[in-house]
Length: 200
Image 1 (tube, rainbow, N blue to C red):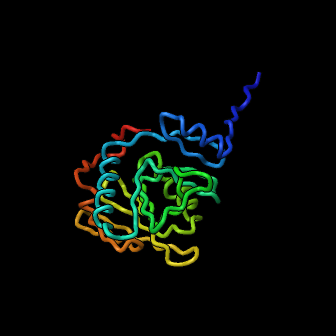
Image 2 (cartoon, rainbow, N blue to C red):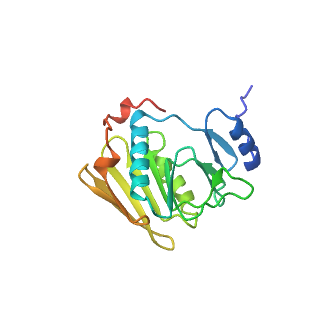
Image 3 (cartoon, rainbow, N blue to C red):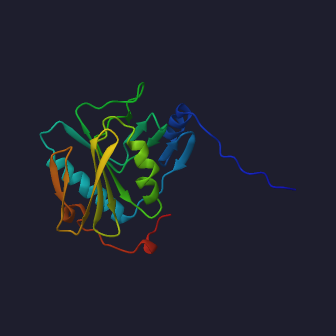
């Protein structure tokens, strides 16, 4: 007897949202597929905390707001629901029609790279983010060394990449008018090799 290939079930966006509201863990939705999100390492959480703190303090008094990992983002052209590690939004929040828990208009997105997600974050996920009209800036923060890949939109379908290395380097978030040192971003981070990471 020949084993039949297993076909993963597909879900509508509405079915996903109904399941996600009741779920105990967060899931991404990628064009019909529901994907559980893995837990982060202490370093992953330290970097997110440091970024959120520095951005929130640096943007006080401006019409910009910072959100971290529990805020859901809808990308309609890619049919993706996801939870970026850090987002900054300029002006009023734009919600997905009919919802008050899902936003659609980030200016800046930051993802902290892990061994299991870094290829996706650099590739298909970045391509999906680029379909968002308000999206201007993308930073990929390595958690194994002091290294940041920073993309800034310079025109229609044009993005400029700048890489930063070392704790004494400063990163300029052009869309926010804010500069942060990598020393602040990596505060209390204890660098370890990828092989020691405790996540998939």
